[in-house]
Length: 248
Image (cartoon, rainbow, N blue to C red):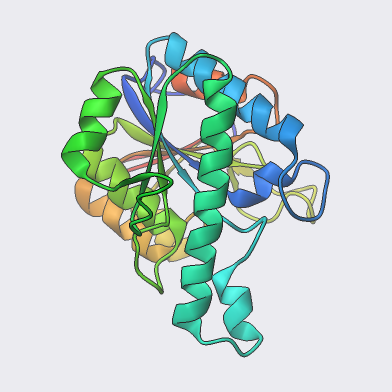
């Protein structure tokens, strides 16, 4: 459970990370859409992390614009709804790219759905090369397949590009045994195993993503990105949060 320390053995700068951002973070204080000031703040922190020497890849959701599951629940064909959701992630990715490049750092958007007029197709070796050349790489359109979440896309891309860890950006400072916004007595975990996350049904990421990370020993760090500077702190190894790994 919660202790006074911030991180355990992972307390060191990370060489290459994949940061998972939900689309909802781009709303700022709004109820939908993209808040330019929020997008710029996120971009600034990614740029600061990059300038500190960490290679940055990003997977971004589209829930601020459209969520496939919600569309399906209202009668839309699930595959169609999921493809619309994938296109929403492309909008967010291009917005983030524009915000990053305002800070004079190169970035590339790679889409799992070919949209050649706007971004590159996803090619693993090219993505790795971009990272090695100091570009921030944003992966859009999830896995390119319906019925898979952007959490699963994050797990897949992190393993493909050889990331040291997935940094799961949320609105709470780690994983709790209950919803801390509902129950003030909820307890925060300092670390968890993949098995514990699945057995407790903690829903940090979907079960497919957790299982993929477990099989490939890809650690996940869950932290609160609403705190200014926390993305930088997470890549530096001194943010408050919860580690999920093979052995807690």
